[in-house]
Image: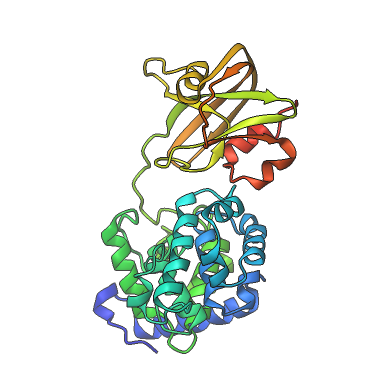
Length: 365
């Protein structure tokens, strides 16, 4: 049992912490979902799964996780892979910087720690892509250490359980929640305790319409007692989503279409996509896709015909995409390494973001 300072969290009592640990662990061990990363305590598998699960649904992650581990069963095989291979397996999950950080982290661990994921928090936090939450998950689940693992689900549970009226989008609130997690985590079974908090947030203590009558912590939840469980947690409103118009190009050479690699910086960096331009809605018109092809790739086209229309929503913006079929007139003799002519059957070999796959899947040539 970890030491608990009653003054830290209002009048939540020591016996309540004991009940929290006991009831949560009991509930988790009997009700948790059977997931592939829960069948092991391999720290590498737990690391990969936790990064994939950030802001992505469990059902979506399962096939990605299985494919990733099949391709890179050991951290050494991930470290030895080319970035393109890693991004290709990640394509569709989004947040590609996470895939790059996992790749960098694997190289770092192999170089600095001889391929063994550290068991000390201080050392884990030196690894690219591993922050406080992921470190806590690895330490508690893989190594059985009493470390907090506080993500968005857990902050929601804590806000309601402890009646915390603090904005969970603020860094200070996250720090406070992490200290709270360290205070209440079970020493005897930190793995089941932390996973229980995560599972409770995902399945019972949901953002809206929490299933309080099914909650193992119903009788000690202060928000439920006060009737404010649907009010908490407090979180400032998101900035309005930016709207962008996109022009995409479909250029065909025999049975192949043109793909270009996106810039090394910015959104979806270094991923393969259809040639495109974008402009913020409300701004002056930007460069057309015909001009983009000629200026950046030395490709002259004619007869643009509007074809497929699709939209794609990111966390901070929405793309309204219009595909234009273009007739290829000529190409510069200059060798452009960042373009490829690819048949539709070969598309799966390239790391292509979901936004562009939505359009490509409807292309008929």
